[in-house]
Image (cartoon, rainbow, N blue to C red):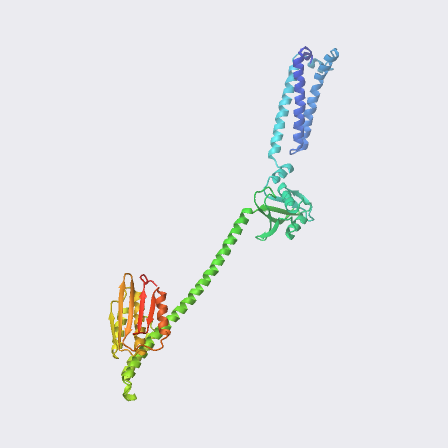
Length: 448
């Protein structure tokens, strides 16, 4: 160490700084070792290295003291004195200090990296605090063992303060005893709390679902309470529920509409059956009455031609039950033949409409008009005139019977008017000077 007395003040200051750095870094290494695994053994080792560094600082302190008092004191005692007074020892001393500094820096970095990557109580707490989900662990009596920052913020937003009992906090959630603006709901059997916007720094309302479970660890039972953000799922569920309500409402409307359609269809079929029965029976009765009227001056037993009666009644029920309808032109030919057999002439001028619906309607009206003319007007000649103007057409029915006295529309004419108006047409009836039935239909009525 005598070589240190020959170094300049800059070299001695550098050695002093090196010793200070060695003490500082070794102290940090010892502290970091205390918080690591197997900390007792490592702490003792680093404490020993720190003691060695302090022991190495004593000779340098002796040199500095000698310079301050102006007296060079001997270095070392006994057998170590020749070693300490050797010229190369100063350089060896400096190399040991550098090695201790390098070792303490290396150990400190290694211990720090180990603490950053290893699991500890502090790292677990930091990890739990960084979760977006609220987490709380408590004992069965409600004493909270651990709660992260998110759960504490939820407690404050829902109840106004951080609760000290996990059991009391869950009871408040279950009872709905929350701050104004917060609401309790249920989702999938769990408690859901709806928080207004800005309560947790969110720009919109949020929904949190709280789930409580029991954990058994080493024979002890603990309670875990978690809070998950289900805002998106809640909004989707609300939207789906609204859409489901709309679908149910529309399904009800559709069901009522279908029921009304069934009712209207039955009424329409019933009306058609009644009109068909009215037309067929009216035609047959008209033929029968005209046959009886033609023979009224003959004895009663001779008046009724039983062959004629059988021909008129033959197939009546089959015709009423049958749904098949001949073509309008075939029907008119048959009608002219039947009425011609009792002396009634039907004269037709102009073709029937080409559309099936309008042609069938004109044929039905001709049958009803001829039956009324023969039955009520005692006509022997019925004139039918059909005119076509563009897409529409018009039909006039007149007869040679005497004009009626007091005239009112009955079921036959009323049924005719309903059929005509259902296809957008008009019907006009005149009693004088001759009975006139006029029908006008617009074009495009074939699909009705």
